[in-house]
Length: 139
Image (cartoon, rainbow, N blue to C red; front, side, top):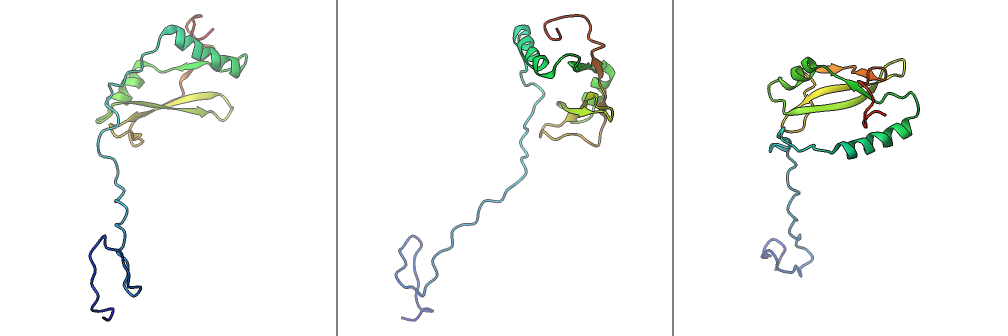
């Protein structure tokens, strides 16, 4: 039998060395996720005690005089969230040229993508000095 005349069935051991073995199926095509990742209804609940513990951990590492947090006004938050397709907000830590830390907010769509072509809120008002009084989150 010549190699042109030889046939074989899949899952049958190949005994003729002149025959190419079946090729394994190609890896599945990688596709961008289309199912929503975020809904805007995720539960971010935390007790004041746990939040105080977490912020205390940060303050202990950051040292005296470090920025503890920041304030964004309602209008900025609503402007980020009112964009078509926004289901939430992502924040980024940032730093001014003078070294002062700030936060940046951007809308996030249901696929978890930053809405970078929309409204981006920047430069939160720092705590300190604008901390709103002592509480478990900042003292």
